Image 1 (spheres, rainbow, N blue to C red):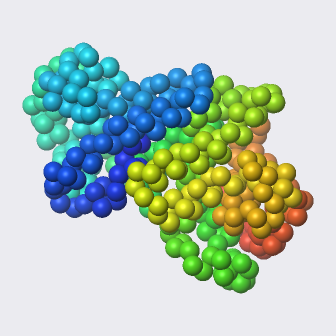
Image 2: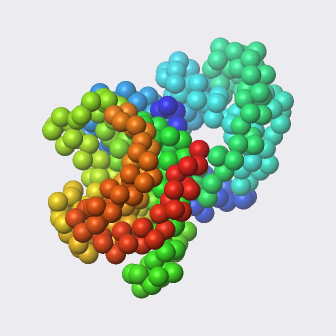
Image 3: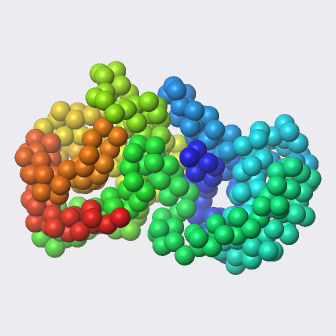
Length: 363
């Protein structure tokens, strides 16, 4: 599971570099290589705030060592041979094979056979001789796997691949089904369109870039990556201390978004992400967290996400309970109008709840 974060540092690399169709120049390649160090920094920051999180231990190794080479010519630390941790040596093979057999902005996918030959040529220089020999001997299993996934529509979305893997890793650990963040995005879009249609708070959202706003929603629970496995997967009711740790995910989320902003500069995507991450557990009556904001003192992004997040949680299975029906979820949100939720937004939700139900039934 932790392998999904091997490229998390790329979230700090400029889009103009990640999406460049041509060869990177020396300065751009130098910046691209920093993603390994950025990944370690992000994971270390999270790891320092949590305990019992073996997930992050492995994630840090994957992020920091998958571009090291057997001959010592890799980066970021120029490690050589068995000084490179085993997870990094494994990921080096997997990452190169995956990159070769998939389209990239700067190249078309290589065939399986071409990719195997390239890796064979790197035995003992780029790759661990033992591991790469095992790969070559078992390469047909990789080809079959590649065929199974190449036409999977779930792999294709409008979100940058690094952000998608980050949010999917968070979702998997916290008991959400794959595609959880895509559902959240669709729920938000329903409310966004309803606001414009009924001219409710439309003056606020009319200046937003809709695509950027919806994309940023994928980071709303990113702080949960800092919460220990024992809490995320606990079946029984959380103790007060455990619940306090769980609540801290909003603060950790803000810190993670801020770290990304520090690396790439302030952009509207991260502006929305920071508000969605930090404010979606605030309540209309001021009894929420982390800041106890009240009413319209809660940024609109947080008030929207509060409804969406609760609906999604209620209609999804969790480690501690089974999902509720759409009707039950609607009734609970209706009862929270004016206390937990913005009354105007609840009215909008009730007007379009059937659209929510349609999305909730998607696998």
